[in-house]
Amino acid sequence: MKFFHLPGRFALAMVSLVFFVGCGKAEVPIDGGVFLSVDGAETWHDRSNAQFIVQSGSMKDFTVNQLMFDPLEPRIVYAATAQAGLFISENDGEVWKQTTLGGNIARLDINRKNTKILFASSKNEVAKSVDQGKTWETVYVNTNRAAITDVFIDFTTPSRILISTADGNILQSIDNGINWQVIYSLEPKRPITRIVSDPANSSALYILVPGSGFEKSTDGGVTWQPFVEVFKEFPDARNITAFVIDPTDTAHIIIASRFGLLESRDAGGSWGSIETLLKDRVNIESLVINPLNPRTVYFVVGNLIHKTEDGGRSWMTLEGFPSTRPITQLLVHPVETSVLYAGTKKITK
Image (cartoon, rainbow, N blue to C red):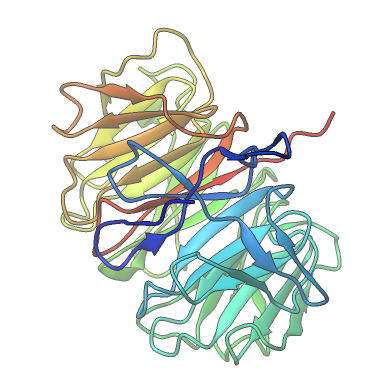
């Protein structure tokens, strides 16, 4: 077995295929789970080793719904799964530890001023932890049984939490999750799938509404403006699958849909298409921007990664991803931006 070091502090022992001489056995790489790249998504390494509450094992058979860095310490990474709850890694993904929050965890957010405080959604409930996931309490239950589709902790005033629901409501708590009230309802009722915040201004918010594009608030969610007509030139663009704001210029937004990629330079007021290598209308599963160099953009179709390093003028496809399963999310390291994580989807037969 050969050991080798990867750039920066990311070091691991990786064997793609090990033959045990004399016993006729081979160790084949696992197919799903969490993967790490340290070279801008060119090559990937398995990072699915997990410690469960009662035993050790692997995350290979789970769907990874979300990956998220600790805002203050990116060595700490969270993985929300559909089958086994929330996991935390404190060593760059080398080992994942299962927290006591089980079930299908749809979304997670972390208090940026006190990163031990977490809020997570599962089905129609919201849970809160104040000790980095060691213990949890349920702080909200939707009595209409509508799923909680997203959770947002206001990074300016972290006692304020917003959640979105599958029946078209935005709820707010201003006391760390003790009390909740509806502050906005879509009419007619439609799902809200995501809450997206301007990285520099937590009062500037966007919600994604399938079939209607998005709506925008500039007052923290009190009032909202629909942005439907801006997509009339772009068939299928109103079903947005990813919405990414450039942290270096928050008026710059890129969205993904079955139409492809669209780009705005005026905070969503107008849009233009970004040419890619795609010839047909397909589902783009994940879209990410390099947070330090926004000319580098990645998106995923199935398990095939598309990458540009010149703001979309030219694209390449990176075919070395080691899993046959669809990628659910790419995550770019906030400092060492050649480092990416990827989570995959479990295929049920």
